[in-house]
Image (cartoon, rainbow over all chains, first blue to last red):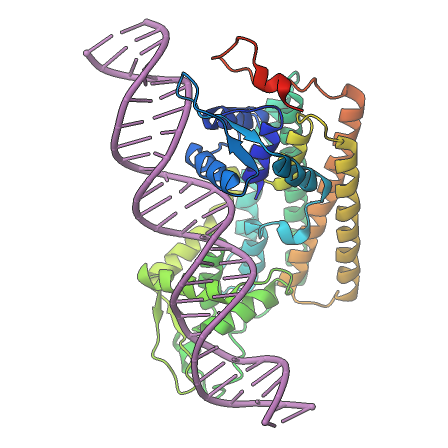
Length: 193
Length: 193
DNA sequence: CGACACATGTAACACGTTACATGATTTG
DNA sequence: CAAATCATGTAACGTGTTACATGTGTCG
């Protein structure tokens, strides 16, 4: 959903063509979130189909700029006015990984946590270095960078917390599926592993 | 990517069929991350095609359980052993929204921040209430809940920080596209708005 | 000339969601 | 009996990625 709205937001600055939009997006996010150029064109096509943008005539240099429509402007205003909800967010892979790690037999949870913390701390260090180096950077890029720093810090705190909880309470006995059919001697489970 | 690995992790407990896998996944995440049942079946098909799981004969009750293969076990072990990297993570919609808000003409950034903070604080309150109510819940579900609390707290902190930065430095003049072609009096930009 | 940046596109595929179809079993 | 739950699937569509095709312009 965010690429669609991002393109609308960029077009609110004025008409632009695909290649230019990608450059503007990547510039705003400090080139850390690369935007696939193919997706820009397909998204522009969908936006045009939905009448949120309109194609301008191809210019002398073979560029095909688009302009945002009034309908597109309303759509964009709605995006800015409505908060990102819990349901909008994708499932977090790390959270799922650890939640499943504690109930999967044979997984060294402490090791999973330790490896992730190392990786996240390294990332955090890199972000911090970048922030110090580019203190005069564009506001948008600075916000993105700081967002990633806040998130990485929270992740490390959660990892530390989880490590402590797991160490304190221990892992639950990994019980297999409580199938409500087939109670009689589930061989499949016992023969496994 | 996480549904694929989640199913492998659940199958590591023992053979199970689609419907059962969905229930187990949702139970582990406290029913906050619903898993589409259709996707379970299509993912199982892909996993079977890639020989990470194998279908067991349909039983008397018409259920079609799957079993993880050795190859699937290796794949799963690799998932647990490798940290989630920055590149694996999806673009964060809120971060993009605010980064673009500060460079889009006519956007009330303070208002966007305020609305998001209200929504996130409400969410945080709900999570905290849940945590207090279900303190005896399954470990996995508690970890998921705490993860969401840590993330929501970080988000609020970032919003506060961003609000302060924007208030202090002010917004940059929203300059249109610096097209390196067509310098001559970009009418399209001026006629817009 | 050859490499690289600019510029537009298509194809194939993975992943995710919503909705629909079908049938068996369970329960009020 | 009717509704809900159990159980398996397909179709359509949006979103995202990688890879490929094609052509122009620029620069060493």
